[in-house]
Image 1 (cartoon, one colour):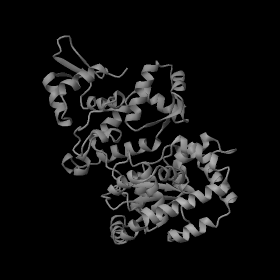
Image 2 (image 1 turned 180 degrees about the horizontal axis):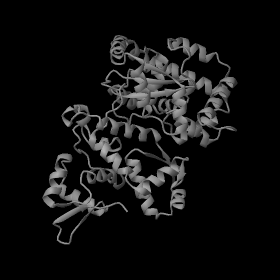
Image 3 (image 1 turned 90 degrees about the vertical axis):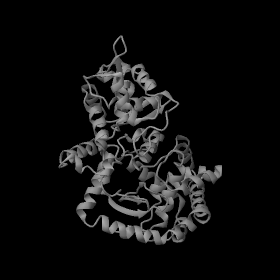
Image 4 (image 1 turned 45 degrees about the horizontal axis):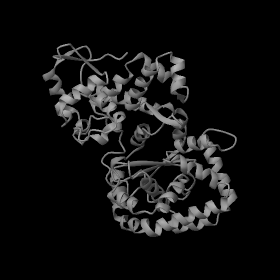
Length: 429
């Protein structure tokens, strides 16, 4: 298996990293510095061009940036935009005109992070193909010459070392198959089918740090590998506590019913309430638990309306982790990587590497999944003394455990007796 050294793929990947610099973790320090140095126009153009990355990936991975830009600049604009639109419809699994909803679905299926305003701008820009193509070419040329070229040239020795590391780490097709199965990137069954049909192309992503990122075109899934990779080409190891957190999220009849509905397609919260005949508060709680455990993704569908989609790949990854845990010979053989972080990915930004909370969120909505994670550390059906509660909570947080006890009761994850001396975890309704 070969690691491609594509300046074009790396540049498109870097555009997306810059767009996500405020929220992404694990990228190189250069990404944060550069994102802060970019002008408002550069940032706006980044958003637009990165939204088109699925149609800009090179057919020839060895093509230089100069060759790529010359070829792109000579393209007939109307034909180019027509191809872009057709590809978007294919990615959205739709026919007919390219609507804002189909564009959103296509970009989502291509793994592209794009704001609503950028999507609306892109739809409008497609009505003027020549101007859009010129803007794309000018921005790529500008970013390459101003920001990317020097970094790319300096990284060539490190890329060669990364390639040697990759050859040693994934020496055969069996390992590659495991890598394909471990991609936790799929968000629905249609995308999983597309993924299965695509060739995997690994490329050196020089600003990825410890990240593994993804770009997609018609035939290929481009996987960006950073220099800080430790074991990204092997399935991500899930700690036992995180596995327990996920399995507990599944251990409820109402949540299974919701997942069965979402397996048929994306639904609004109101549609789920209607079809399950559950109270709104119960559906909201169940959806939050599923979302925090990674099984459901949420998006705003206009105004205050939210819709939900099942993350089918997360289900497979969870039960693969369960099978792996059952096959462990003994607890002493659990790797240090497994025990490094028991914290679910959705709240890891509030914890350090040792799984200790270092930041208490200011927003109530961000506190709920943290409290749910803390509650999952306790056994259902067992009563705890105040001292026992403190002993369980202290290793996970430097915060005041008395306040945490109160929060757990306030959000109805815990109950206590009238004397305040006995606590127990509340059963899900």
